[in-house]
Image (cartoon, one colour):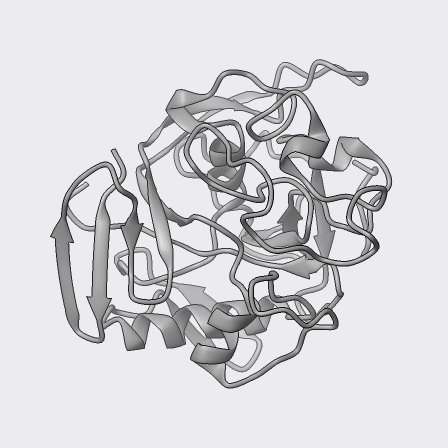
Length: 270
């Protein structure tokens, strides 16, 4: 993996085309993926209090549902029929999946759930239909906002704790492998694994200087060579990678044993 500068909840049960909303406050689920409503808001993207200190830049994101965990090997196999991971355990995050694999999974799951696919995929050319309520990858801003606890954020050093080992698997704690997705504490929103275990693909093309990007729902530049990934992984021996501001990037065809993804969707009416 190449790093740059080591630089209220609802239940949604979906059966194919059937979509039904019931009981608030218990999480939002499909038959396959459980997701949590992240109420929109604004935050200081990239804010860091360690050297080099940065005040960050204020950006806002709209509300979205985010998968409670990284996509597991069982979920990935159910949707695609494939088992690409190096570390075999149904409840561990899927890994060794490219960015292209991740967006293809999103469209396949959307079809199973009777949702309009978020992406138009023509070979390596992928475009995002923002009017779609289908499953998709989070933007970098959505990932960081959730990692910081969203509107419920308590300014922790790591997603849900000031102690990295409570919320994320790293090289020194993982046993040199991925671990089950709900095996450590969730953050303030009830989301697991936003630090450590596997890096998570985001939608955005990587750009070092984000100052020229929109401040409302930024989604990266229009073109690039690498896609952003976030959160740190089991193979990292430095805790800085698990902090909410930390960024990494890889070519979209990269497949590593510490690189996976989680999904989000924008529900209508929010």
